[in-house]
Image 1 (cartoon, rainbow, N blue to C red):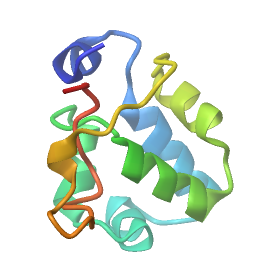
Image 2: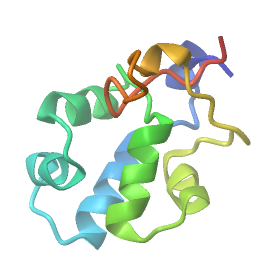
Image 3: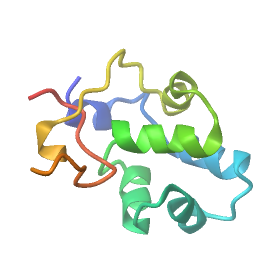
Amino acid sequence: MKKQELLEDSNYDPNKLLDRLIEVLNLKNDAALSRLLEVAPPIISKVRHRVLPVGPALLIRMHEVSDLNIRDLKDLMGDRRQKQRISSKSFLSDGSTAELVDGSTSE
């Protein structure tokens, strides 16, 4: 499933995931969640408004801070894909990641 197809999928709802994380972590709002996940607030907003999907790196970070397993996190948002693919565009020439949210399409 390509990034755009995922964002348009009627089963995909990242709001359930974000709301559950806020509840489990006893946070007040998206800004507190973004601080805990160490991402810029606009990233959370773009995920919530279906502009960006929850990419593999962000999903792993959510797992790290919440101790919820990856499959449960994916189920919360309705992502039924069996594999997450990281685009080569997500990595800088020195091997570090460019950002925490990336497309999930294969190159």
